[in-house]
Length: 94
Image 1 (cartoon, helix red, strand yellow):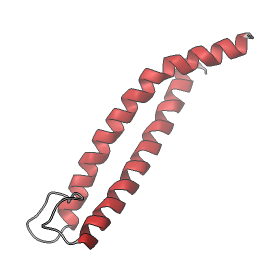
Image 2 (cartoon, one colour; image 1 turned 90 degrees about the vertical axis):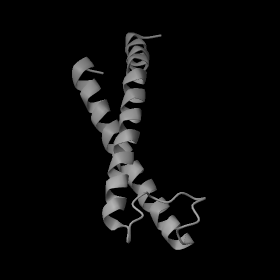
Image 3 (tube, helix red, strand yellow; image 1 turned 180 degrees about the horizontal axis):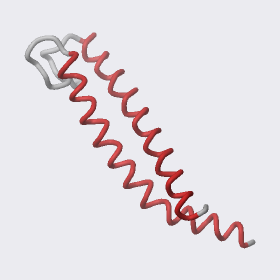
Image 4 (cartoon, one colour; image 1 turned 120 degrees about the vertical axis):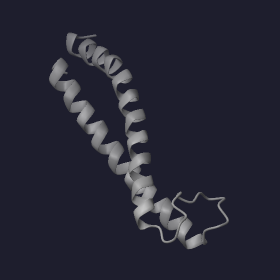
């Protein structure tokens, strides 16, 4: 194994906790953002976003909520993962 391969392996191992922590933070942040968006966008006094088993909402609204939530989670996760990787690279040079 060359020195470059050893460095890459150790960098990957060191990044795992950083990646896991950033994923958790990203999920929590996306959840908060989605709830705020839903509160402003949802008609009426039902401010909680619907889930698949919620019977108070029509199917169309449940599907719309799922699409918005999925897109938002993906966007936030990508931004946080990319930012975390760049910060890790600056700190470690790897």
